[in-house]
Figure 1 (tube, rainbow, N blue to C red):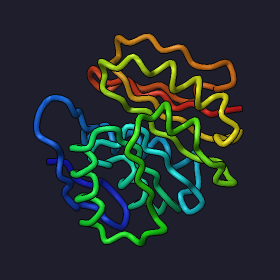
Figure 2: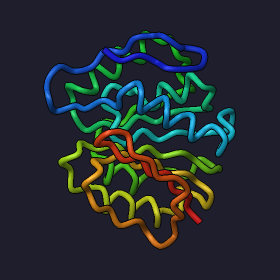
Figure 3: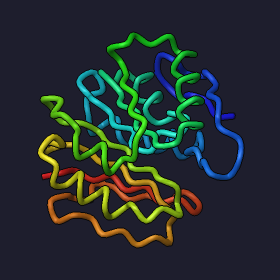
Figure 4: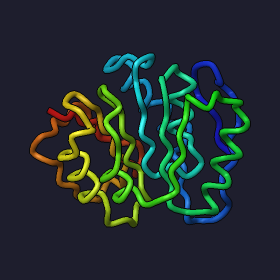
Length: 185
């Protein structure tokens, strides 16, 4: 079981789908990530895109810290069921979240411009071959505005090509997990 680390919903436990096909970001890595992010953005105005939502831990953590809205994108029906249960535990207003049950690559192509910069979490299964594809789509989709932040969580041994229109702001290693924070320019 994992929990929300900080903010309004601190300490609330989240359900996680049993098995090895979901690897939720650990509490320790999530805490470190949000400590890195907080000085870089204003949560009150932030639209968060949780592109491989799973349990929704990253998007829910952002909402707990005051994010304006979270969009949860999850292709798996069984994971979407757990995600919906986790959202219900928070009794969120309907305007605070949006659910999309489809593949991240397809969803990004149809993403409507929120009218502001956003924060995108790219945290697919470590075995996924979609890192470079999704980063390229985020880099060239006009709805992901200049100044938006992209967080990439991967296995430290994975080589990822960052698009030319993204700056690497921070790179950290936590055990076998690599965190990269990029800014689109």
